[in-house]
Amino acid sequence: MSDTATLKIGNDTYTLPTIVGTEGERAIDVKPLRRESGHITLDPGFLNTGSCRSEITFIDGERGVLRYRGYPIEQLAEQSSFLEVAYLLTQGALPSPSALTEWEQRITRHTLVHEDMKRMYEAFPPNAHPMAILSAAVSALSTFYQDEVDPLDPDQVQINTIRLLAKVPTIAAFSLKRSQGHRYTYPDNGLSYAGRLLKMMFGYGTEPYELDEDQESALDKLLILHADHEQNCSTTTVRIVGSSKANLYASISSGISALWGPLHGGANQAVIEMLETIQNDSDGIDKYVRLARDKSSGFRLMGFGHRVYKSYDPRAKILKGAADKILAGLGQKDPLLDVARRLEEVALEDSYFREKNLYPNVDFYSGIIYRAMGIPVNMFTVMFALGRLPGWIAHWREGNEQGLPIGRPRQIYTGSGERPYVPVGQREE
Image (cartoon, rainbow, N blue to C red; front, top):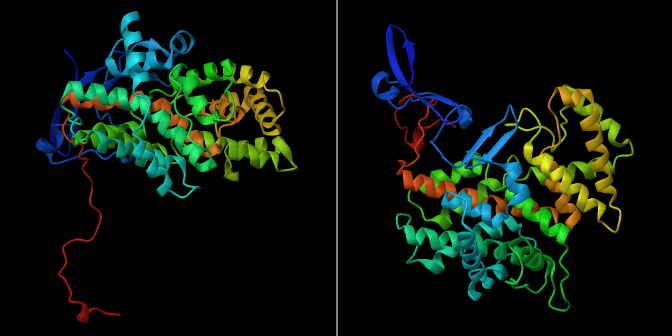
């Protein structure tokens, strides 16, 4: 039997049920509070509010733990593939060998987009941000499957899950080719998921494409590490939109828009911009390390520390090895990446950074790897979205399966009290 919480408001006392999660997380169920007391809870940004019960992802920020459906992220990144992780997240369990083969084959068969979708790209200006194109194109996908978007039909949900996982990389790569004025490269279904994406982004019809296996492996790891991260801004957006029974395409499009924000998915882009600032400053790294130590400076190192993790981001530990391998294999030197490596050394060795838990995080290393691969900075958040796609789908499905009510937060009104309307001719200038 679970404990209860007692809340006293004036002379009145209210007893509220508590909930305990699998890993010992505790919550107070406040649903009865307004009905019984007339009060609501106020929690701007929902920083201490649980919006749902979920079986998908567990995070322990103090201990640096991240698990997808119970499996440690370290094991998945080392031994699994992105498509297998996508199956785990969206289907609820690791697949059998035959189920994984069928899953991969079904996704591979759906990688093409309707030829009419290419006209959408022509409507955008050449310098349109790829995230804007991605959000619009994903939403537009629903128009090609208008008879199969019922969120309550399991078969339709499954085929749309497969379509999204298959087609979003194609949509993303086409947006890059559009911005470069290059001919679109169609998906090569003889390659892996990550290999196919790399060829669509960097291949040309005029010459054979040589796939770099280290880059293919690193990209697959990046996608796995970004696949889900519990109730973050974009995932919560997908759940809220999905709670209205909006179709999967529209809900995922909303998540892409939320991810676009610089405080969310744009952090790895901010890392590269910070490194460029340091590189262009003759005072060098030492100046910015001093500024980072000085709270009054207003400067902070992008890609260091994490809002959730109070120790080393477990994803960053994995990506550090991938970054080392990618950089070691580069045939040419990149001064910006040299700045990143020196900054990394300072953060890992300096006592101030260790005491403040300001370790390099996943955004720091992902930005470095994307840069090393030659991926343009404005595509960084798109790559994040490709990785987060199965997590968004999983949460949308879970919310609908649980029959959660439509999301409708309350508020505390602080505007004017009731006042009479004054006709325009009687108002003071």
